[in-house]
Image (cartoon, rainbow, N blue to C red; front, top):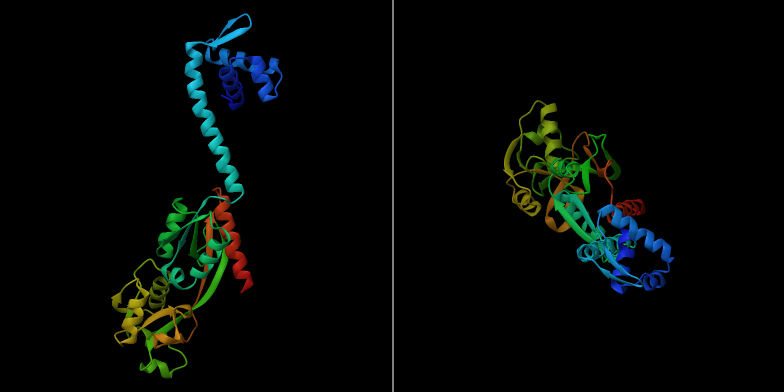
Length: 292
């Protein structure tokens, strides 16, 4: 069923005149008559009573009029929605961001994006990179930060940032006098770690496996302020990114003896349509990185 013949039908039904409908639509009257005739053939009913120069709706025509009006309303709303998306006057961005980046890296970017595109809605989903990647693949979110070390064929990605994993200690810890920390030294400490599924926890678990060591994890939490507090009070050692540490935290960071780098990408599904709003956010994010 095409929309255009229904539009012609509604105009004739509203005016009860082919001539007036032709004038309003700026369409030749024979074209309108042909469209109505095709509708009657398609539905197998007569839509109008014809009395010489007068017409009126049949019962079947009245039923179609009610349904056609609703269809035209939906069609108009759909067209409006598409136009607004094209003009970026509406739309939603759904992006997955790990907690560490969400708290310390993304806020100024998100605020700058919202300032430039105030009518776009931002939905930020927090979680571990593995969980976020699963949500991305399942279509629950449209963009996500993922670890670059395990590329997936059906995901497109762009390099976002490269950050070094730093051993994080309080100012009185013996490691503070060293220029770096070996894995063996690190795993002799009681550790404060993020829960499984977070990218820095995966890195530490993999490092322990490579060294044939078992981590002594005394605390597990995804709350960064709590991790900082525990480390500052001397109840454990952790690993954080430098972006998380502020001068007022009273903490010290040291690299591993063999530096550990995290490559993080922004990713999307290759086989799925990326909406105008999400594409705009992706382009904005990439542009921000290029300015740094």
